[in-house]
Length: 171
Image 1 (cartoon, rainbow, N blue to C red):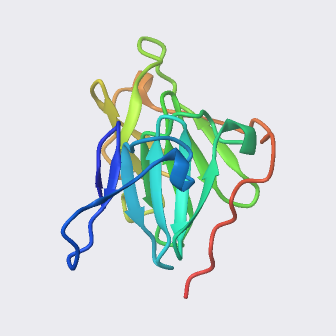
Image 2 (cartoon, one colour):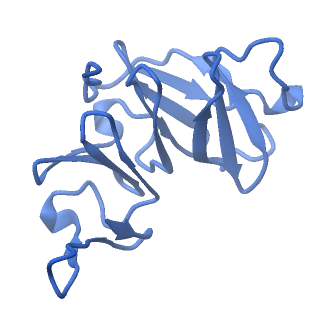
């Protein structure tokens, strides 16, 4: 697969043309901001109108109506335990039981989007934020280098609107 915020193409080595996949194919929206192939083989596409997962050429799309932090999903990450974390402008959605929403404590620039998410190996998450900066999220240990206090996220336990896609058990 190859894509940008406007379109996604499936590329088949044995064919002469790439196939565009979009809303008509079952995606939550056209284009993507990030892609992930998780340990179970599910491919996740994050985009401006939610997140979609593809398994056996069937798509399932999720957005704020399913309890996500926001419709726009800027990053998708799989934690070592198989939990999927979605990055948004201003927060994260953790597809766990129960679903968890994490707000960024970013008073100067609420529009900061998580463009990448990385586990630190000690239970914490590090986020690359656009338009700039980085931040530590949940579980960072005291030995982990920390950004300035005003860049640290705060955890919110806002209730989800509906049941999110369940995480898969490790194989």
